[in-house]
Amino acid sequence: MSDAESRVHWDPQMETLPRADLRALQSDRLVRQVRRVYENSAFFKQFYDRAGVKPADVRGVQDLHKLPIMSKDDLREFRVASGDPFCGTLCVPRNQLYRVNKSTGTSGSPDVFGATRADFDQIADNFARMLWRVGLRPGHRTNNWLEAAMTWHGYSMTAEGARRLGATVFALEFDNRQVVPTNLELLAGVDFDSIFIYHPEIEIKYMREHDIVPTQVHPNLKFIYSAFLCTDARRTILERAWGVPYRNMGSSGDQYIPASECEFSAPALHFLEDQFLLEVVDSDTLESVEQGAEGELIVTNLWAEATPFLRYRMEDVVQIDESTCECGSTHARVNYRGRYAWSVLVGTNRVFSDDVENVLWTHPETEFAAYQLVKLRHQPQDELIVRTTVSEVSNTDELRTRLGNDLHDRLGVPAVVELVDASDIGIGTVKFARVTVRD
Image (cartoon, rainbow, N blue to C red; front, side, top):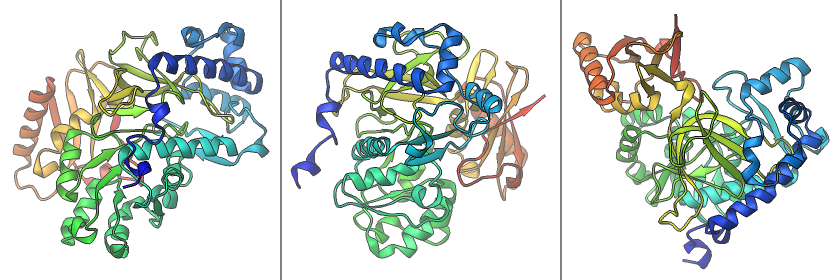
């Protein structure tokens, strides 16, 4: 094994930077970014002027709280008023854009954002750092359905990150629901080192129906990985079916934000704090929470030239650990509780879709079942209502009761389960809707 392959980190010097030095670096980059967006972005100039903030007011990370927090609704409001697809956030002339992407629009209309050539190179390096932590190495063979099927998404840059660190990328899936047929049948002779998956409910069903054993097809398969928040139940099923460890990565395509597990951090994801400044706030008051407490993740982009978002609400509820990881990284690890929009308030308890998945997917009748939380328009609600799909069950009343009791016992709230047809909860190429709203 070469020295490069044996390294724990893609960029060891930056990954192990003392936190005091990391904080100083963040301060320098923050001051530069605040000046950049104020001078070049119509959105931020208007946004900061309304808040009475000038670039001179921010002299370092200690002044971050002076900047208003921006949301996707703020961007949409500017787009409607101006007709600008970039929502006024573009800080360079459009002819300097080397790449343009959009978000999935999970909580509404998508965001449009882009990158200069310098941004593109930085993104590739950032994603290389993320993939190195996951386990990708020079000479490895891997696939990338994002580049083939979803080039519009920011995370399609994982392919560039893989190439940057010296891996060979096979990007042949025209649809991310074709991961297994493409990589375990069409490309059976490639002998992949890792496989990028996405829809386990589809992939494992196909493997079972066709009697496919992944490690027999690819004897050197070392791990599988993906870019979704992974519950304990999902991880258990994945590792049992594929026969290799699962490694999680991901954060957001909106700002090309890479994050990933190392062998010590799971399920927490390492962030690149020299590239992104992290905060946690109360979702209702937007006030900072105590260090280590749970709250909504706020991210500030410290590197982008084209469309940097500063103090951007990610809509994910998290807890941040700033202690040094066993892998040696001094950068923060983020534990995800779930997406705020994918949660309901039952009495005084907030229940997330991942909480429900961790219960449903441990029952054989609802393993990999699509599901939805029913969110009553007026919160809080008295009971948890879960819609889920199931097939070929003789006693549906018994199943509903059993699932409801298990949800109640494990989540501590009254629970009602509704069994619905699979067509009622459609699965798209990216996600199924995890919450439905009722009056």
